[in-house]
Image 1 (cartoon, one colour):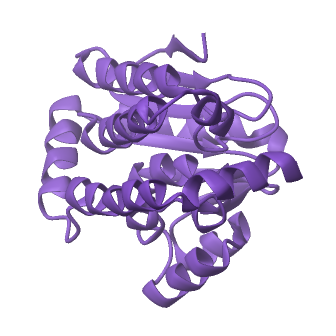
Image 2 (tube, rainbow, N blue to C red):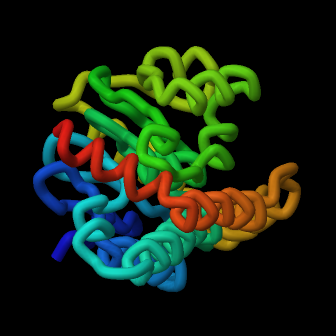
Length: 246
C-alpha cells in the first residue's frame, strides 16, 4: 500500500511510501485523498500530519504509468486523482501539517501548497517541473508558497527553491535537520490538537472561507491546458524525453 496511517493521540499520521521516489500512480492519489478525508471526518482526530518515507516527499505523478497506458485513461485518472488529493488536504476538516524532506515536486507542491502548516528538513527542495514534462498544473499551489513573480520564474524555468528560502518567505514554518523532522512536525500537530477541537475545526472552515484564491477552480483551469498539450502531442514527446534521459 502506498499510503499508510497510524494514530498518535489525537493526531492522524498519513505516510506516503511508494518507492523509489514516491511518484504516485492513479490509485495512490485516490488512496491518499481517502486517507486525509477520512481523518478529517473522524471526530477523534484533531490534526493530520502528512509525511513520506524514502528519498523524498513526493515526485508527482507516475509518468511511467501514463506512458504505458494506451489512450488517455491514465492521464485523466492522474488529473482526477491529483485534484482529489489536493482537495482533500485543503478541505480536510482539521489542520494538515506537511512534513517535507528531500524533493517535493509537481504533485508534491499541490499537497504542500494546500496544507495549513509546512515543516521541512534542511535538505528539502521544492519545484514544479511540469513545463519540462509537457504539462501544466500546481501553479495554483506554488503561488501559495512564494510571491507572484518568483512563482512565475520558478514555473517557467522549472527550477527548485530550498526550504531555507521558503522559510524566509514565511511559507515554511520551521526548517530542521532531517532526523528531527518527524518530531518537529508532531510537536506542532500536538500543539494544535491540544486546543478545543470545536474551535479548531471552525477556524479551519473560516480560514478557507476567507481565502482570496479559489484553489479548486484555478487548479481545474490549469488542468485544461494539460489536456490541450496532450492532444497536440507535446506532452507525450516531453514525457518520453524525460524517461529516456533518466
